[in-house]
Image (cartoon, rainbow, N blue to C red):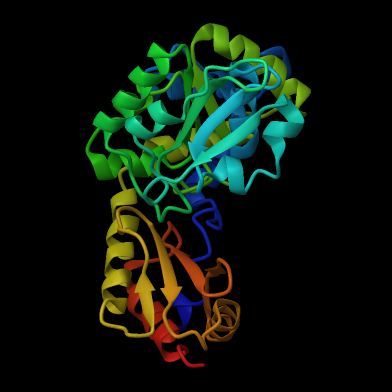
Length: 346
């Protein structure tokens, strides 16, 4: 049992490269990516574009940079971006849209991080002397703060159609699109077709140590190259990281179903508890949990559990998040649940 610990459920970003991934990184052929001369990075660009059904793609160091590159390319200063109030871009990217692109974000109260085409239609601002025009709608699939929830592709198509009818563009924060594809049964290309631009992540879920990519039209990628450099993301022999991403795409996408099954099992251990409540449908690898007993504190609970070898992320005073991932085995699920339940005391 000792080899199971620590059981790290803080995020799917905490995973370590597998031996096979490290080997791919060590053997990667490299060049200067700023000059477009890194063959492994170029191969990753082609692979991502192929998987997502887009004309072109571009490696970026992080998901936040990916989202910000896309927003910068799609907007002008004083434009407005519509998105769900739980969106990563709004909550976890440090106000970057206002600083880097000069745009304002207008949150919409969706359901577990998902907005509808009807809500988008009702929220659109046409613009005017006193009103910022709505020019982009951003959707997050899966939604982190929503509990790993997955959009129905039919609804995404409706959102895209409403946006295009109103002269707007659609950006998808698809950091965990790989999870969304497994849950929905749709290909990544089918999902990505609902957006003009998309950012995807290799270090969440797929287990790569670093990196994301943006994808869209060739014209967009030309613009994205400029913003990537402007935002400090032009790197040199990036093929070492691109090799990890390629390995992740080739070997770690289908296994995401294991993480989803583990999350569902974890949820089952808590179903009958009177002290905690699962706050969102468990669709992928994220559980959002609330503490029912007002005497309980999520930060204190996380400290107690950490001492027993289970790590997780408190979200506010009485909420916490559990994320199953590549480094959490099936055998670790029951011990993790037992430790959390044992520490549920005021």
